[in-house]
Image 1 (cartoon, rainbow over the protein chains, first blue to last red):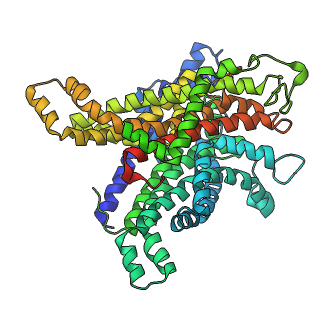
Image 2 (image 1 turned 90 degrees about the vertical axis):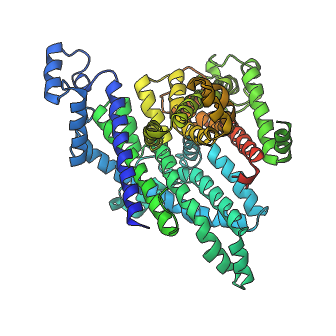
Image 3 (image 1 turned 180 degrees about the vertical axis):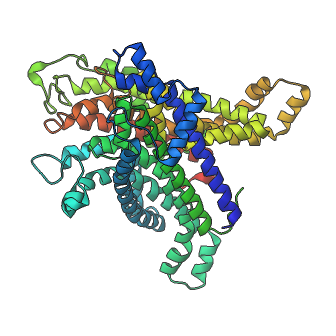
Length: 316
Length: 278
């Protein structure tokens, strides 16, 4: 991986983040009502409103408001939530941490299960594993997360079973089982759709690679089946799969909003919905920019991992 | 076209997808007419029942017939996906075509901006747009359309770049035709086919995103018979009558599977090399 490529990708990511901040700021600008209105309510006198607007800097020109807001984002001053009166930055960081735990476990479980399944399906094409992977993956990509999540609550979190709580969150300090029991159902809901994507992708790449010349050469050279599969085929099949896993972070972010809502899990997704429902503009901006930022960084990480795995890649 | 049809019928994916799609079409045309009851009528004596002879799918918390509500919701759900995707495709194709045709600095700037929109996850984009527009079915449809547009613009632009290099486009420019004429009459017919194939697969995404928005209270509003909304309303009663979640959930899955299977089969049929059942 050349330094040049690294710099170009970093610059592209920064540009993306800047444009994303423009989009998010722009969207919240066209929303009716402003923060002052939200704080004082609809019966506020025009004088009080004007005074607060001046104090919050809302009477400044739009470009100056953007500059102040973006500058604040950079130095960790993300404003104060109008709904909870707490600093936005602290809330976002706290909820992001919990969402990361959820997403991280989901991605780990998915990769652990989906990659071997995809390989098995590709090696025995038309076999039982292959057939179940393709049927299962159509089900997986066709069930929205809110349906799977709600079905999981209906059937596994029934009060009479009492195995899993229907929602909420317990920190690790509350004990290992309370911590895990709150995570198992949300992780399962997130896993289903991602399993489908990643196992399908691994299978289709493995099928391509297994038909390639170099795999035949490796087999003819007398390498064991295992060596051929793992050392030659899988390594090459993983290249596009890494990209798909990164793209899946995008799905994961959408999925997490829904799954956190269903399981009342206090993560970033639920914070975003809270901000939307309460028209809490500073919180909405902070949560949305963070989500988009996480996605942009995931894409950057995937591109760099891809370039590292395949040293031949050059930018453009 | 006949060749594509034959290839479609040869793959099991195409056959199952096509059959399910016909079923969907039947539901769009006749669904509401088939409903045994008025989907909004209360049967207070028969609340929260499981499937029975009188109520094949059971009843909800007001004693409304779930089967009637599922049938009534089919048209809205399927048309939502198709219209939202069509709008998004039209918008994206226009942007991609114009940007690819203009080329140079303009293309560079438009596509950079487009990429940054792509860098916002789909559901987040749709949520932000509905927040601006306000929750309703029409606004959710517009939000999904706008959220779909950037990826369609990417595809349309890449096809446009290859079409732009053809001789007949150079000939049209030499003849002194206007840019709008060249784009609409000379290039669009050659750009549209791959774009439409791609958009078939997006219908499932549009339907699922629409249902998700309704579930989150940002789309269809009560008392609409919307599948996502039905599941949202069922949440307080789901342990007493799980069927309230099961039926609309299965319906969404069925429709999404239909479009996913058919879209994949269509892509394979038109481009045999991209096969492997992706």
